[in-house]
Length: 102
Image (cartoon, rainbow, N blue to C red):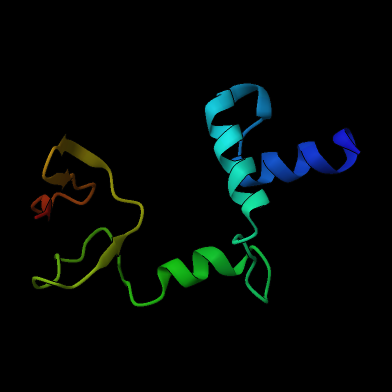
């Protein structure tokens, strides 16, 4: 039961081996599952990132940041700097860096 179901199940949730997780995180997850409010989308776990991505505007590394209030997902973009209030994306094409934050 442990090796055939529980270990693969929790490793899929964590996306890392259980040996790399702290016990507090495991206990939190176990309590959440035992509480009975956890559920899966009808289409399975594949639907979770799809649901999170709904409403995001995807732009390529060469695209300019959107207007205020527009959520954007920058793919294949190197991060030049991480700050408390946002990030500055670098450029691989020689264009100006993109500022993302508050």
